[in-house]
Length: 274
Image (cartoon, rainbow, N blue to C red; front, side):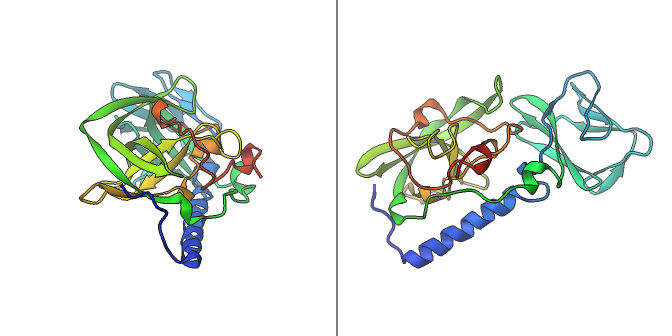
């Protein structure tokens, strides 16, 4: 396993990191991004109305149903719907975005619960957003490691930012690497895209200069020999670092690194960071 920091042109390294940071900020501050969420509403069999969404919402064996009042309209997959609409049974970590006026009504399943999460562009958290503090990029935090697949994916239950909620992931393997000569490893979860991985972790900076509950590092698919590149300069905050209306997973216990990873995004200003 190669553990040396990636050798590269410092200016190009910094410019690449700045591009990444800008893309992170743009997704976060999107008119319907996580900073635009105004409520996290858990559904049950009783019809419920919410101040930031139209209609009455319920869920049951046939999935999520909304009953819209006369004159109310949602756009679902570009099609106007009125009256009663059944979103069906949603898959875990799946969901549908329905458009209502200038807002998006996210209908999703998280931790086995059906939820409604409206996103309004004029949400105060979004309109006041000024960016996320971060450590200056440093090539020494970009290291090469090795992906070690498990014989079979391991169902792994982790907590969530919302108390009482749990997430279950099929962990495909772990990633072994070194920082400052110290051998370390992190359990990996499936990422977004074929073969990609994510590493949820905390470290000795958590709760000090970085968000206490979690950060996430996304990895490209491992090479044929298992080689992976870990660039902790791109350790990112999850939405729960900014808002209590997110259901983000917590790292598994073994992903608490005993070192200070002074790289990547810091504690958001929304949580008292600077």
